[in-house]
Image (cartoon, rainbow, N blue to C red; front, side, top):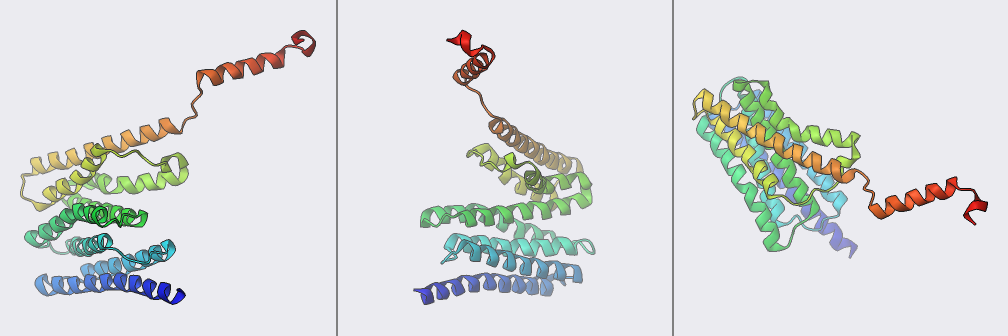
Length: 263
């Protein structure tokens, strides 16, 4: 039994290593196609190593015996996000081909709706898979906001940084860690961020239209986070029922009235 567990654990770890290998292969292809610079190579390799290390540690802690088909889809999407990240890092020296940049990002965004469906159909939904999916989404939004901010200004970074600011605030305010109820509006706003940022990054729109699109992305995100924070704050406050209030008043009166009088 122990041998089987060890063998399964090795298979899981091999899949994460394969993901890192595919990331390097994508960087090689990008390098041969567009001449990826040192910044792009360094950023892409760092992303590959960091993803492999963090994912391997998370899988070891969770004790997962199988990587699962949905996580394979997410890992493939993470590989594309690594390629986009390398292109954005390289864009500080030279602009990447628009078609290539838009194509990689678009496929990564489309696959975002695939891994969840695969998990539900195969019965492989897990906390680790949901977290993996969320982190890949958040990082792609951050990378896109960095790219768009180079043309529109640093205010665009609020889009990519908002989720990480929320996580940081939750370390100081524990009530922010409470689970949120399912929300179609939240999912819609989250999906819109990538689409609107990609539209703004593509350069297909006039400057005024691009600013409006990115402002819409930021506005909807602020509304979504604000609504969730308000809900978490309200539910974290202790609620006193009318009966509990009456009982509290009675206890206070008994404490004030002398024992001889109460008899």
